[in-house]
Image (cartoon, rainbow, N blue to C red; front, side, top):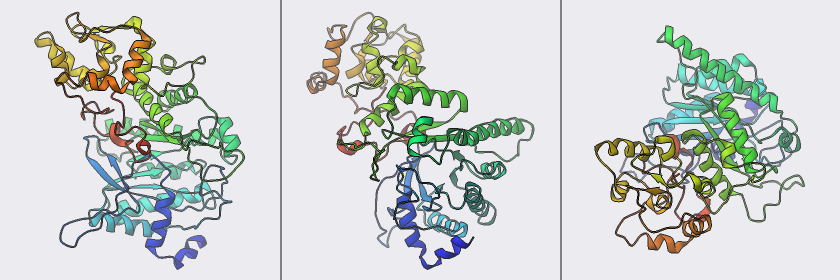
Length: 459
């Protein structure tokens, strides 16, 4: 613990400034960027350092203290600001300091939980021991009952990871880069097997814990919120098809709750890193998130969306629109008769609006006006659906025609003059899908105005 003792010359707020800033490249939760101080009259305030926002299962916005235990690291990953060879200010919290920050922020109603990650100091096991000790103190000494998301450190002692899982609400292991070749090129100290081993352990521990809870209802829960991961996109040459296959494999083989996609931000000068003349690939990140939703909630497979001959998404269309215009033989879909799996393939229909359609049509045939009330985004759906055998407007079921209309600003004006009000593009299906869906709506993915207010396409 000598390194921790060396940190006593820094104040707690100085450490917070360094280690909250060092945590900003982890996109497993979102940040508002708000810096609003209290006025001395009303309750609460919002400070920028260390505070991020995520969403609960019922759609509530939750504020989290998002920090690193330390930005000191024994590894020298070429893409990382905190790599060993960089000359940056270094700091390290003690477990007691993190407990103090968490409890004081919580008492002041700044936060409802903690998101804790770390660079690697001395060894993976030593770092994991610090994380475990922090969570143990929070839960057992400070009696903190709020949400905790903690990173499991690849290569750390298995028993430490297991014990930490019983104290955390969610655990995650960062995949870092999509392929083993990418890791070898940019993170030579990290290995795919070392990363996947704790993922498998967490998966098995969650399964075993569920079986135990069937017999012992009051048994402690192991990572009740499951596990997630993050991979950087654009730092290595993998195409979108490869990324989707990797994500699909993670969902199927490791039962992850979420895969987060982090557009590569060039913070280091290195000949192995891409130049990025257009800046971080934020629009590509956006399309990958949309496609990820299709994998998890809409019944799509990666091989349906892309293939080796066509390995990249069309950035002008959302992935479901792109799929639909290439499979026009499956359209139009008759709203009053189509099964759920067909409805979910229609651009502009979300899972909840499809369920509403199924429920509403039991009472009678639906019209386009009814669909609007049910939350269907008609400005995209009208090319692919019929109501009672008729389309809303005379349209051609032809790829170039539909693509032109979907991507033309004139189309939005034309279909906005019929008296019907259309919502902005939204992945959240008229706000009805809850938490996880809104969890990645972060300041990075808003693409610095590229999408001009249309943050996520309603798939």
